[in-house]
Length: 338
Image (tube, rainbow, N blue to C red; front, side):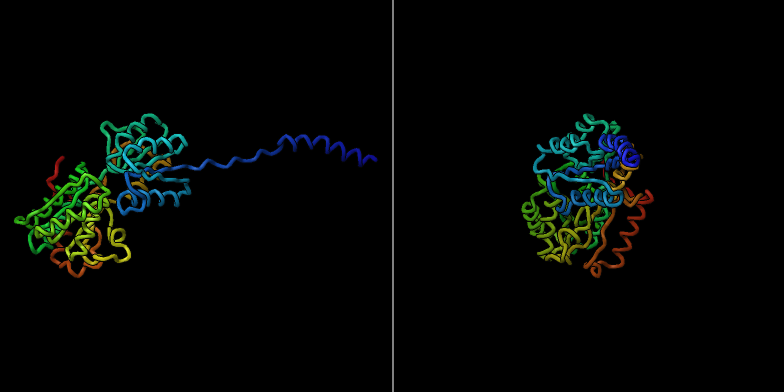
């Protein structure tokens, strides 16, 4: 009888603790760091800096086990709305892509000062404390592309198909023109700006027009617009140069027609830059500033020659190496000032 009473007493004392959740407190799951990416008009697999900003983000996400999401912008009028979506969902870091999204990013960064923002291809003066602006020396990679084109041309006429006339694209074009002139002073450079980064048909039309004027090397510097130009030119048997990333793996992936006419791409390491910014945000070392990627830190340069390698002579390769080394050491300037 005493045993029954003892058990009953123990149950009476402990049951309320169980029912009310008393006892050892459960350890709450740590809040995961959340990072979101808002593209410029385009998609995360478009072969341009949208895609490589996404790749840089995903490298950080996988390495540090972060939560992530992306929004593909359909029209410039959606920039602020897309950023707001992530901000209202309390994301810790937001990446925005492209010069055109600069004003919207600044407005949202000031509205949400506790969120760490990073923008590709834009910088602020004065610096916004919670924003890193990632900028690249497009004139340097454009200059190398021009030095390559100027040595490859037989007709002494080369071309460039550009996207919108904004500072990064202007730097590509002027760098390209000056690089051509360095190695081929009597070469003619044909160029055009097209008021869209997502108009491959217009890029194609511009490239074919330049070919009709005897251009035998064409540089595409304008996202999918420029890619449309070099794709059409390569299919016509003309040497072409890609932009931003190695277009051998994007525009000409899986050895699409014309792949063997791609001699290189004027690269910007957008993936490395975005990864670095997210790493800083996650690890607590983030500081608003302008981060410059250029020849001195391997932030720009030419992609490998791939299937066109045999067509690039040793003399051309040596000259490109000489120019690249000179820029890295500060001994060679592109002459581009905006």
